[in-house]
Length: 227
Image 1: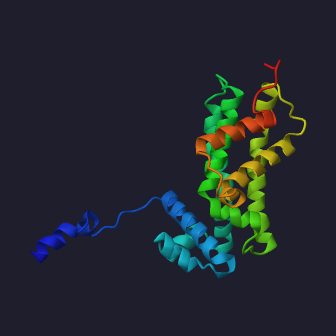
Image 2: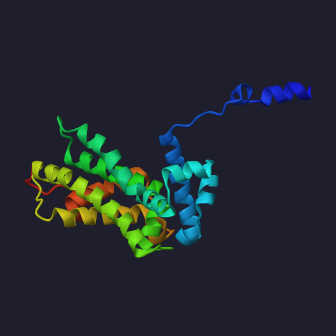
Image 3: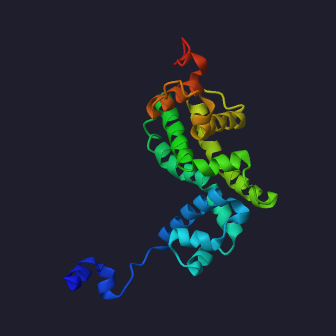
């Protein structure tokens, strides 16, 4: 009976004597996810590559092959929310180029992409915004540079859409900063900023209201006489 149970529990990989080989991109993703968790839990100074490798369930040699230093790993892990935003948004934006969506829908999808990406990496963004357990300035500046790169790549897309839809792009950098600041606040600090006595909005309500507010201000509707 014991022999039969052992046979039933043995994995196919164990039968062949071969472990399932994971792709390099999958290994890298596992390492970055583990690094996010460890950096946010331990802070930069106390986090170790050994602990991150154990959390990712990879050998240290594998981690070192992808990220030779802890600083390299920190930059990748902390920049992930902003790098991911660009990769998630561009396909959405491209899908409507030939048949442009209404303003409200396009803005709502932009806000939704940003909000969900930031929400997924909430602890990382919070640590960056608040400066919790911040490492050396030079290292932290490397993370901010990744954010600025994302900002710069988004800029021509936003300018094109603003001008094509009849909005002013004369202060586009400030416009982008305000939108980012608003959505970061909603994604990271919502439960801290609002009284618990208020009935929480659904994600759908939050996204729709934010998109309308960005486009039309407190009126939440297009001014009379505009297209």
